[in-house]
Image 1 (tube, rainbow, N blue to C red):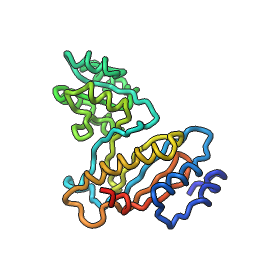
Image 2 (tube, helix red, strand yellow):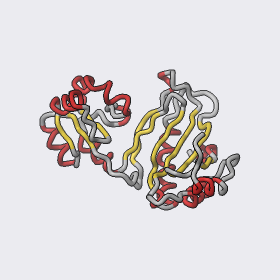
Image 3 (tube, rainbow, N blue to C red):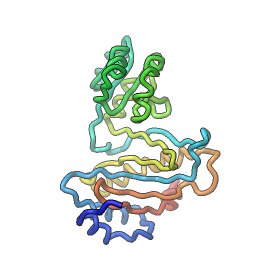
Length: 234
């Protein structure tokens, strides 16, 4: 295990690793332990009681954070016809069709954070699935990135839309803002994501759904939350 820095070790002393903290106390601790000389990202990690190997236990979706993520996202829209102008007016940085697919395919161009595509272009987008898929960039209807409502999709992404998806270890990792947001904005963003994850519980999931919930800053230690109390809100 790599040796942790002095600031991390100091932060670790403030946290009881065996305790599940109430949300307010956890966020206060997070703000105390974020000691880096830059505005750290706040990450939420949730381990679920699902088996992602089964299609009926997949947990995936997207939600717009009320206070955004603190990071501007570069959007690529793959479409044609009148939807090109619609996407440009909504604020997409890159808009086009086959020529952009070819650029990704032939040049390995990936200067964007999110890809939105209209359904009539998914046959073409499929050509670059092997490039986009491993990087989590492949458009998907469940995350709202395959749609004819391109203006709405772009505006939501720009407003702070985040995608959550359970990985093969049954864990969801989502950025929920910046340390500079302060306690209340971080709390509202976190609860927005947690409510969405709880509502997305698959019918096939058995036993305890929220196995563990934790928050951390980019350079800080993880802080465990009382997931049951968050679950009981719903």
